[in-house]
Length: 104
Image (tube, rainbow, N blue to C red; front, side, top):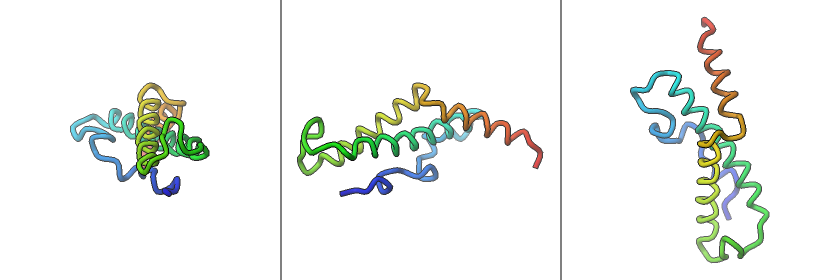
């Protein structure tokens, strides 16, 4: 059985196309990175929510049920984050833009 930490992709392992296009401006890159981060957070939250479900039901109960569950939860997380999420991306984007303005 997979543990919840082994199924969650780290932000640095996401493909570059997920985080931002290479030629995008910094604000677009920040927005995409914030959305990807929120998707990872939602994935973690949803994985723990679904981990308590019994075998059978929507997942079936066969050998591949854990894989399908993980893939479905990942798509749920991406979909929620892509449609505005729960506010983490907006807050993170605002903070990153503020930090970018501070002289280093």
